[in-house]
Image 1 (cartoon, rainbow, N blue to C red):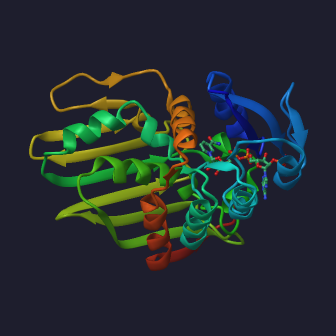
Image 2: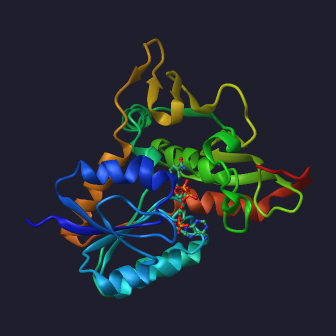
Length: 306
Ligand code: NAP
């Protein structure tokens, strides 16, 4: 089969760090064009925006690496042109937008893949398998990183639809919804939004999974050690996922890890979906964030500058 002719949209940090190498390493994909107002990749035709790219190039698929606000409009342009679409996380800024994209993709007969890269971390599949027959007693999620280190100058993250600390925090929720054997429900939440900004720098969510409490702490001002961990207490002991899900420790056993293949796996899956013209969209992580925003007790905290 001929490789999928792919366009990459939004040449920023994640496009360069992860998407470009993963696409280059996949012989079922051929990167033929990019669309970005300022970014270019050497040796690849560059366009200003997706509309220009789609009308000027014969493309089978696009992968969107832009910020979530604006992605709905970009995805719709591709879908209506009969082009398959892969979305970075979070897939859009509202649930309605994602649902509308699913309907549009069905109508056009194209693939739509809402990716959750953290679900591809090495410890996630084994955690899901181990937890499947356990009684869940309690869950603790700690997702704490330094916004200045990982998102330098990304003003959009604290704007409306930028998700704030949920930009990384939704990764934890994508893992939790994947590994826990029952659905999660938000019971209460609090958020710290810096003065003059729209999105939170810190948040706490209390959720429930069956009778178990799930406590999640998100912090974007964590200096020193960075923490991306999920601990699950069960009737058979505590499972620990650390380093964003890439390290797993089962009770009484040594830590296990494997090389990072998150984006290689996402693109392999996308090539499969394109071949089948299939849709893979799981809204649960976005729904939990939306529920937290609906119910949250908001505090205005001191102004923040990058
Ligand atoms: P970024 O460095 O700011 O890059 C996003 C690119 O999108 C920009 O370079 C910009 O390129 C383009 N863009 C289009 N519309 C934009 C707008 N209204 N505001 C700002 N940029 C706009 O962001 P990123 O870190 O790559 O994140 C992009 C997406 O990837 C987010 O959804 C994020 O959650 C996800 N992600 C990020 C990471 C990470 O570690 N950074 C990890 C996993 C996933 P032009 O100016 O050239 O158009």
